[in-house]
Image 1 (tube, helix red, strand yellow):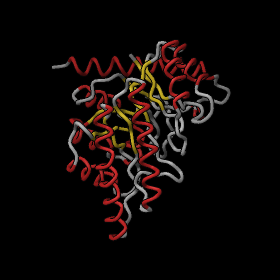
Image 2 (cartoon, helix red, strand yellow):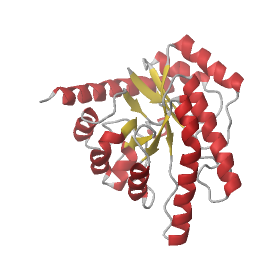
Image 3 (cartoon, helix red, strand yellow):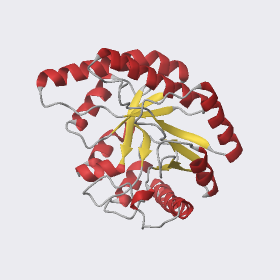
Length: 276
């Protein structure tokens, strides 16, 4: 059981070719990441077609990156945009349920340095999470908040986790973001009991490069140990991008290399878990 993101090459357009490539490379699960930063609404025929592709290709959903839309954003301070953003998130919750998944990932907005704006933003987040809760519970879907590189994100995660229970809200650990901020593994260690999703990729610490694991400067030994001792029980799930592969790398070559890397990391996690 290994997973990779559907947007490894592109995040919009026809998802069928990447799904076929993902299955051919040996992955069994996908982190659905198409259209995560657009205002796109998945309709019934589109969700049904994704179900058919999954069945044909033997793929399953590990989790789904829900939407931080352009004009529809669940945490927007303008209430009509916030409400529209909630509809967008509900759409992804329903899609996750249909694809037999149980976790969506969201990005919390950057914390403002202005106290009044920061308070208003936190109030908008609370209103939205309160309004989403009944729908998420009915669908059996939890929300994972991702550690970001934005100002005040660690404090924001701490506040959200203090106000909402683990059967509703948890952590999505993004290893690339954590490496850029420099304190990601410490954050993961603090919140590993709330870990319900992972976005695993590498970089050299200077930017969010979405390289394959073991190609950058992340301490994968420590990360594997933290995953093994965490509350996360699903498979290794990559969130990588072909854009930083050597020029001319074919998509299928990239995916097969990603699969080998995911196997290596999965073995490392299993090994860490077996240690006394």
